[in-house]
Length: 144
Image: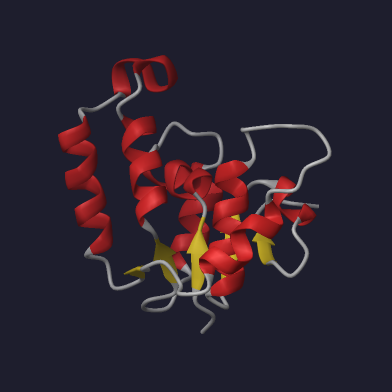
């Protein structure tokens, strides 16, 4: 078993049945061993924001309280493990923020990459952009 930190996009696809990658996410999740899928606080917060966003989900959006309850239910699954921040995260994170063009868009990705690197975790995602981080062990689902 390889412990993983799971990106918000994959959890979102798993939780939203109408998402284009729901089937892929479901197949991945169904193949996991106990405690193989890691969930961190930042990803939890991002999921609550997305699940409660009518601009994204329209009539399928739910309240933040219901989103939290859904995440609590997910966290109760034996395949899911809550991961606290690794001790060395602060040493790794700044080195991943050096972009040639100023951008705030990649800060969350850099944080998740640093989290995975400093925690010796694989990052599981749908986002090919994670290929840019040296030292990151990424599993990009659906990538060719």
